[in-house]
Image (cartoon, rainbow, N blue to C red; front, side, top):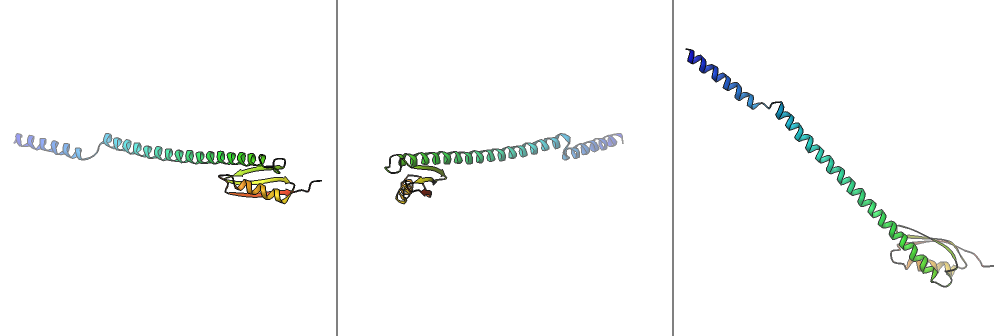
Length: 138
């Protein structure tokens, strides 16, 4: 009878041991939580890097546009300096996103039209806003 009791006791311990293996213990739960936290952190880092790359791309495009506008302004001014009738005029040139704005004074409608046409001929100019004022020479 004692061997039967011993056998039942051993069987009970084995059954309890096996059933305990089916349940995740604190170490397994902690491991899963750490894995999830690492995955979440990886996603957040990836999203942050993507946002940073997008901002850098946008900033690069803005800088490139700024350089393009500066170059256009310089080319328009150089064109005016080489053009008889315009080089002595008081013309200011401002460029934003390829749109050139001319302000200042000229001595005739013909010179106003010439300034607009010369500015429009510059590579990269999308449009010209002519705000030149014609003043009569005295």
